[in-house]
Amino acid sequence: MKALIMDEKDIFRAVTRISHEIIEKNKGTENIVIVGIKTRGIYLAQSISKKINEIEKAQLSTGELDVTNYRDDLEQKKINTVSEGNNLSFSIDDKVVVLVDDVLYTGRTVRSALNALMEIGRPKSIQLAVLIDRGHRELPVRADFVGKNVPTSREEIVKVSIQPFDQKNSVAIF
Image 1: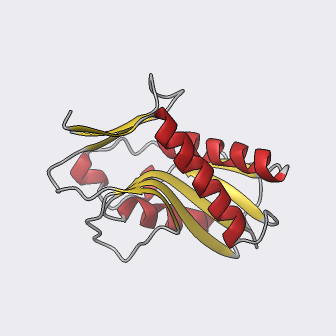
Image 2: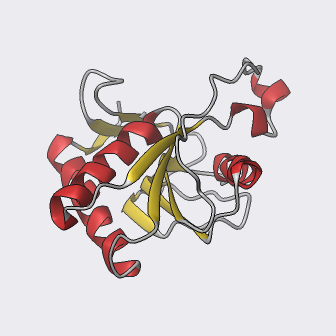
Image 3: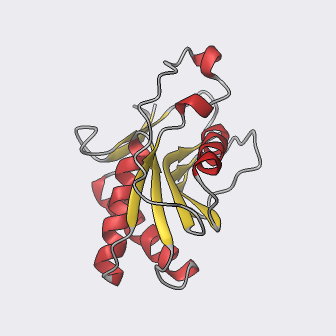
């Protein structure tokens, strides 16, 4: 490990700030749904939804999006193309969808998520929240809500660990 970028307290503060920014930008919570991109984006989405509930006393619909079958690098990365499926038990039609992921890098995962969402329904708008923005975009994608901007080289790896999927909550560069 080269550096620990965020510990558990840093992640908690970032989630709290992002939650407040979502509420502020949307002037409340009406018509907002939170959708996490598998895998770690799901846990961040759940944390953001829980924090918004604490702040606004508003229970937001929160779901999971698997973008595996929408990726443009399936053959290159030899990803298993059997999708575990999505867990969206609510309509996204005419909703403000806050899409949540752990790291924004090239923008290709977000593009895949946008394609998947548009097949599911027609949202009023889509906003993007990420814990880490590391730069190096290949597509014109920009997050609306960012936990931390971390300039990196393409050779570096940003490792986000989020409970309960991982042992602890942290962000490190390798």
